[in-house]
Amino acid sequence: MTNWSDRNRRQGNKIAFVPTMGFLHKGHLSLMKEGKRAGDKLIISIFVNPTQFGPGEDFDSYPSDLEKDFKLAEDIGVDVIFTPNKADFYPQGFETFIDQEQLPNHLCGLHRPGHFKGVMTIVTKLFNVVNPDIAVFGEKDFQQLAIIRRMVKDLNFNIQIIGHHTIRESDGLAMSSRNAKLTPAQRIAGLCLITALKKAQHSVKQKETNAAAIIRNAEDFICSHPETDIDYIKICDPDTLEDIAVIDRAVLMALAVKVGTTRLIDNVTLNPNK
Ligand code: PAF
Image (tube, rainbow, N blue to C red; front, top):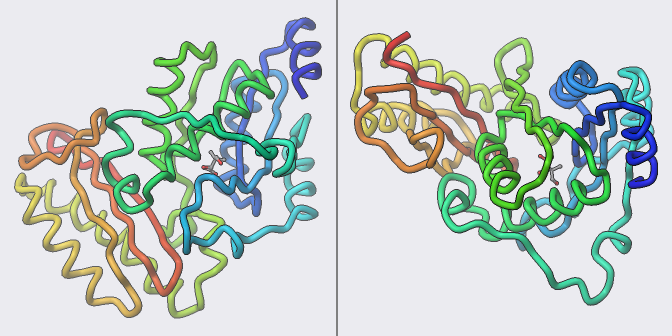
């Protein structure tokens, strides 16, 4: 993989990279199109990374369809699909991990201990092996994107990180490989995430600035839907991810909700000046 990248870079190509865990959907395809736009060659990886799943999470049941993924990636014009195996990436004796001090102590990091340590470790390994000039990540995983931007800066990776807006189903549900696990009834209930976020945006437009009041309304709204169990609803600073009390500038509203056994996340910007 590294030889391929080096050879193509020597020929004057800018190499773009989209790391994925497979079961590709339109959200991934949109990241890939962005990668093709920003670079001359596009590499994607497909690897379900065991170190970012905690005990009792869905590593064993994470959806997979490699044949379909290959077809979709080829149709987009991906140059390389990199599919390392677990034994190559985590051989016996593996014991070195990447971690961060502050950003993982918020949002999903509080509910999935060790998750971002696993993400940073695998992204570092992928960056080292793939050696791209550009990497594209989705804004649906806002905290992941913030952590990777910080990591790239702190560890002097010479890689441009591009954040790509969230791609949604026609009814607003944020695209995710995990949506495939929802029953038809849960799929409908899952819409409460984006509806709660849109209601919050509407409240801010109506001059509500109290973050706690907006969060309470979102909680009440989501709890009124069947099979929902809220992990968190937060309004925070988009750079530090620290909670904020008064919405006096553009802030992030992010939430994670289990619908049945499937954990969904979503986020929007609340901007009182728009
Ligand atoms: O966002 C994902 O799909 C994963 O966290 C990533 C970045 C591919 C690392 O395994």
